[in-house]
Every structure is written in C-alpha cells, then in structure tokens.
Length: 287
Image (cartoon, rainbow, N blue to C red; front, side):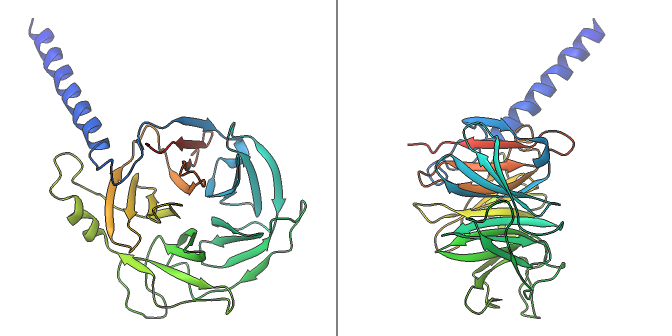
C-alpha cells in the first residue's frame, strides 16, 4: 500500500510539473504574436546534408534557401516537402550562419561578420564577393535579415564594435554602397531587459539566456522576430521595442537556427539536427 501511495504521489507531482510546463509554452499574448508557435501546422524532416542548417530565407513561392555551418553552398528547399531542389556553390568551407535575398542578390554571413554577396541566377557555381566588416568573432554573428529593405546583421555575443560602448546584443545596418557596417546600431537589448518584461508572468517568468541565432521581419506588421538557440522567441515592434517573448517547446525546437516569413505571413523556423535529421517547422498565421 505504501509503495502504491508513493507512486500515486510521484505521478501526480510529475503531472503537475507537466501541466506547468505546458502552461509556460502558451504564456504569451496571441494577439501580439498571431501564431500558435508551439502547435505548428507542419514539421518536415530535411536532407541529412542539412543536419547543421544555420540560416533560412524566403526565395519565391514554395521555395526557401538555406545555408549550413560548414559548406559554402546555398540550398534551394521545397517548402512543401523539405526536399533539396538545387545547390549553388558560392565559396569554400567556412562557418556560415545567416542568409538573405534582396532582388537577385544573395547575402551570406560568417560568424566573424564577413559577408558574401553573389547572384542567385548563377548556375551551380557562383563568384561570391567576400567583404570584411567591423565585426569580429567576439560578436559571433548568426543573424542576417532584410529590414526595411536593407541588410542588417545581429550579434549573438557582444554587441560592441569599434569601442562604441554598446552593451548586450545589437543589430547593425550594412551599407551596400560603402560596403561597410554602420557603427550606430539599429537596436540593442540586454538579457535583463527581457527578464524584466516577463518578470510578472505566472508561468513563463524566467529566462536563462538569450543568444540570437536568427531573425526576420514580418511582411505586414514589420515586427522583428528573433529566435534564440536557448529556445525562446523575442518579438520587437516596428520601432524596435519589446512586444512579446515566447517560450519554445524543447520537443519541437531542438536547436532553432533559421527563421523567415513568406509574403502571406507564414512562419518558418529551421532546427539543427544535432546527430539526427534537421527539421523545418511551418506555422500558419492565425486569421
């Protein structure tokens, strides 16, 4: 009888913890973030070559492009089934983290902040221009996105460049004409700012860390969606103020690395496989 009672108590305790965990995953304003982020529409398994997928961008209807950590290749992915439709070699092996397309130009960044620019119309092999920037490995660049029609890079580590005194994480414009980074950040934030924002919540009120691994601009609202490999989603409004923070399910988001939207507002988040197949999470916008 004693064993039965102990097992009953343990089961109840476990169920209570599970319930609290589930509550924390929905503890956000669904009006501010019109997506059931932890109840995705579809999850696709990607080719084994994309196990270390690190950057994601929308290209055209039913087609995304991606880069992975090690190979200097651009992968064209069918968003309906996750299959690789084409590969485009643009440079030798490196540590590639983010990708974005503006017009016919593709922009890829390495973790040290170097930018590679090439034409998406290239066949099989591209002639990428490599551009050195003011960033270093201390910044650990993983995010690259088109914001207001311009290329912006986001630091995963230190937001400071050229002794500009910026604390926390920071995003910077890339001046395409001058081929250099604007040293005045577009926005910056610190972990304590995020912790303060969720401090009064009932369930999701503790943020261990937030290391940006990708970001994208919503096509309609112009909100900025920033994902962290620490399984959290930060949303800034169009004036770069904190709008919402969402906890991501460990079961669904093993290691979120890439994020993008299609023109209809459908949200895509890629996850590294970490020894297994990488996943592409697809989330329809709540109408």
